[in-house]
Structure formats: structure tokens, C-alpha cells
Length: 191
Figure 1 (cartoon, rainbow, N blue to C red):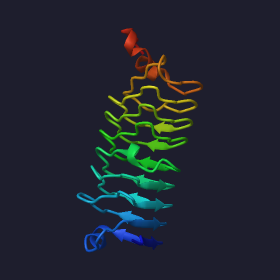
Figure 2 (tube, helix red, strand yellow):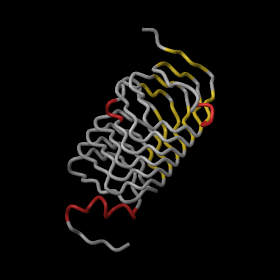
Figure 3 (cartoon, rainbow, N blue to C red):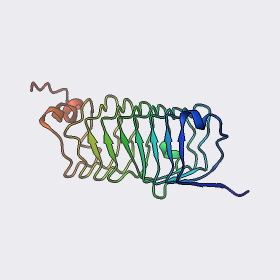
């Protein structure tokens, strides 16, 4: 079966609801104000695209490809990025809600998360070398055998990261983040 190939197209909420979303390749496409509730992105490829003000919560991502995709102001609850195609996963997240999502063992080098809420997100086994978490709420996020080398968490908050089981070489933290690094020791620090 041939896949649909769509390029240089903008889908807005009103337009999108009248279309049938088919498995295919979407290159340099912009999705604006779309509600993808009930849709399945499995097997789809998104290249150099943008999702703005979209609801992608609980959308299946089996073998989905995201290459150079921007997510802004999105509601993306419960997504399983570990099911995406592992080759070339690259995206940025700006003012998104990613609560209860999973990036288990995902390769996210130099990924930028800006003003994004990441409550109870699973980053176990992820490669986050050079990632930037700018003003992100990481409350309850799981970092277990995560590579955070050269990552920047200076402006983020709410995280608890065990330095003994995660790679934190040259990772940047602010003084306010120190309690999250010492949490397991039961040390109380006043700042």
C-alpha cells in the first residue's frame, strides 16, 4: 500500500476536522489548533513540521518518525515516545503539557524543553546529552540510568535526580536545584 505524501500544507482545526487522517509522510506541514483525540500516528512520518496549539494526548506513536518537529502550546499527555522510530528522533517542546509521558531509552540529544510541564515523565535510560530544560516543571519525573551529560537544568525545578545512578558529567544546575540532587540522603538544605 502506498503511503500518502503531503508537503508544505497547513492544517487548521476547522480544516482538519473535515479530513480523514491517513498514515503517510508529512513534510514541512503545520498543524494548528488540531484535536487528534482518537487518531493513531503509528507509521506516520513528520519532517520539518510544527504542531501548534494541538491536543495529541494518548495518541499511539508506534514506529512514528519525528524529525526536526516543533511542538508548541500542546497538550500531549500520556504519550509513549519510546515507541517512536529510534532513527533520528528530533523535536523541541515549547510551552507544552507532557505529563505522564514516557521517553524510556529514547535518544534526545540536544532536545530543548522550554516552559514545559513534565510531571511524572519517565526519562529512564534516555540519552539527554546536551538537552536543555528551560523553566520546566519536572516534579515526579523519573531519571534512572539517564545520560544527562552537559544537560542544562539551571532554570528548571521540582526534579529529584540521583547522582549515583545517572550520568551528570558537566550537567548544569542552579543552587536552587541542589536539594533535588541530595533528596535520597534526607539532607535538609535551606536556600
